[in-house]
Amino acid sequence: MEVDRVQAIASLSEQIDTIPLEFIRSENEQPAITTLHGVVLEVPVINLSDSDEDKLVELVAEASKKWGIFQVVNHGIPDEAIRKLIEVGKEFFELPKEDKETIAKTPESGIEGYGTSLQKEVDGKKGWVDHLFHRIWPPSAINYKYWPKNPPSYREANEEYAEKLRDVSDKLFKYLSLGVGLEGHELKAATGGDDLIYMMKINYYPPCPRPDLALGVVAHTDMSSLTILVPNEVQGLQVFRDGYWYDVKYIPNALIIHIGDQIEILSNGKYKAVLHRTTVNKEKTRMSWPVFLEPPPEHEIGPISKLVNEENPSKYKSKKFKDYVYCKLNKLPQ
Image (cartoon, rainbow, N blue to C red):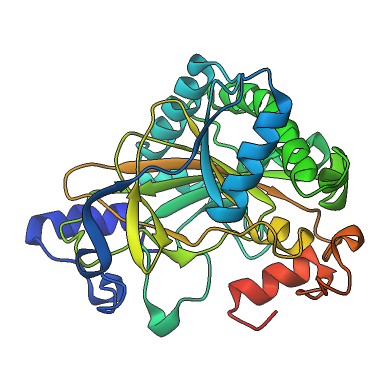
């Protein structure tokens, strides 16, 4: 089945300086109207190489309770590994359409593969983005069928990044666990332990003639436990805070950390999933590489019992992660 990719629509739209109606957001979503202009939001920045673990626990916990988003620097992933990840992803999206379509999503592939639409959108509206999903860890969850064969260095760059990312992820889970009074291992164990799935997504937002009217990705919180994201240098990530949408400051080689829905649920609301969206650019392509740390599909997630008592009754239902995903993507109540 022939699918209209946003990359192709962008090439046509550029010539006529307009965009199709299905990409024009309602006024209460349009970036030109809803963004607080002239202010860049400086979300907390945490130096992960700090030797004072108590301080790191405090900083991570505070950022996750008050913001739901923070950036980490000196995280231990070499700049070169990030550069290679960005380079091979960019090369894949610059391939001819027929090359990319060889790993297109199918009804059988689920979320993995190259595609355009992800979730049910209100009023049939569309995001100005194409994407690629594939699992990068653990080995038992990987299906290389959905990894690009071109460029040839794609697999090596992603495997190297995945290996380094696991150390960062383990540290963050430990600090988040200690930050709500649990033992260091408990939060990761509750979200799947060593079976935790690392889902890579590459977002490709081509230049858009009307960035004032369109969004790359509509406002949402992530379904994951945690999301660890690398952006390119083109501004686009926005966070909702105090009634306004703000641009988030870009820091080269920093990792952007989002608290996802599952950590909010496990912490019984102590940590907050961040409401965010993505804008697009008139001249430049924006790209980002979020990795979603997800429980296995059959794993049941609910508030951790130690965090529930008479003063803090359970705020969320317990359910299998696959059921949570189904409800969220289909806009059904949880």
